Length: 125
Image 1 (cartoon, rainbow, N blue to C red):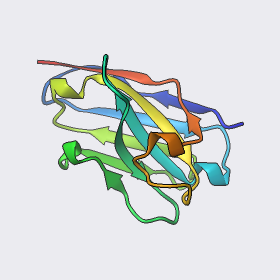
Image 2 (image 1 turned 180 degrees about the vertical axis):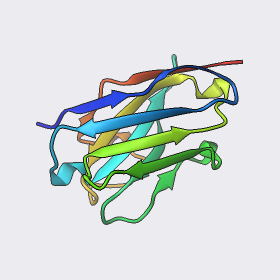
Image 3 (image 1 turned 135 degrees about the vertical axis):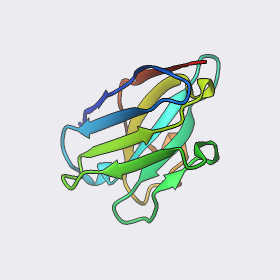
């Protein structure tokens, strides 16, 4: 069983930046793809960004528009999401998730094996 620990959420003014981090408790093939999703109140969980070991990428949702950057430490168990030019519409709970590289599209919530508890990001106007 893999545990994902997220950190870095908080309150920021519009136009500001935040960095989210997620560390997996261990490496398995089910952590080859590491991704971030988000869920705002009353909305479905949506894909934000993903990084793989052997399946190309990184991959980003269209709404990121060059504002976010996902990266991975050499340890392979830690992924970081740098978020710049934040907008109030980015307010949501952000979740880290992992899956194998070959278990389906990176933006499909149902394909992910492990999920973190989520970290709140609030952007004020």
